[in-house]
Image 1 (cartoon, helix red, strand yellow):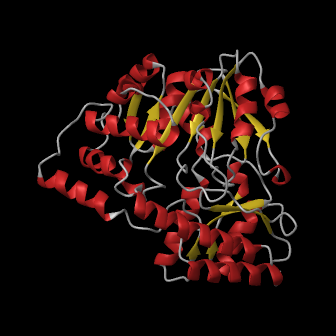
Image 2 (image 1 turned 90 degrees about the horizontal axis):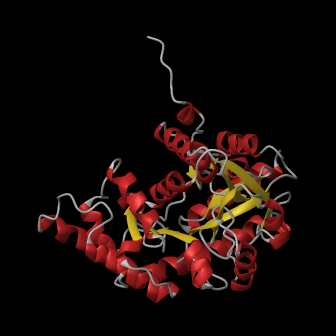
Length: 390
């Protein structure tokens, strides 16, 4: 038999971040001394109050199917959270719970993007955005940012990128991989440009709770116009250290869009697992806020330490991120080929980082500081030794 595969699936590329993390784990399992800074995953355990809620759900037999969009108590907890934290009014009919924010994004792109629709994505970007646009039949329109401008798009760049085919702008604040955070004034400039258009704004807010400088502002909170055009995507993976629990959500004032996503999800994954739903309520209602703040403070300390250390290495330059838990380090003075740089670093120094080319910007690498200070110190020392002995 000669197999023929769907073009939409063969067009997809493997996630570079997952590929590097997998390779690092394989080398480590072979007994090699590998320090990995490739994964976007907190090293903190899920807060005990969240785990206790899951254990209680299991003990009470809450292990059956639920409504596709999520149980009423969870949808209400998300609605209350959005009002409390972001000054956003969403009814439970305007929220859909998904198996992680990546699943949320997949559903949104599938529901809205079709052949030849243009999606504007600032670069550097999270590796999955362009892949999902391509899978949906859309066309990626990248806006190249610069380190000098803190990796943020300008209003002039956005105006120039918009065409009659523009369907959506994807905005991530805080950003993966750069950690930059858009200010209220910067978001208002974007809102002014989008006004009187039919362009959706997809706001990925998964790192919302991990901000160290400045203030997080949800774009949908800026005006009624922005509330109606913004699709807010968030979850608990990063902020509450619940990566493996797989809980994300979509909030949109367009109830028809929510119904369409509900239908798609009903024929694919159905509801997310029932136990996670019960645990997520505790992650959202403030019960874990103390643990979240402890984690945020630790990340801030690690950020400051790592950024200072990197900037002592000749040929490397790291901007201090406002949020998330990544440094996007400029390495073009040593090698403009970030893939080769990272492969050599892994082979000769035993350090795993992610090449910038995977995020749409060569000559950089992403370093996750979501690990302990001792490992960060050892890892950066290895990188320094490698760079200085080339």
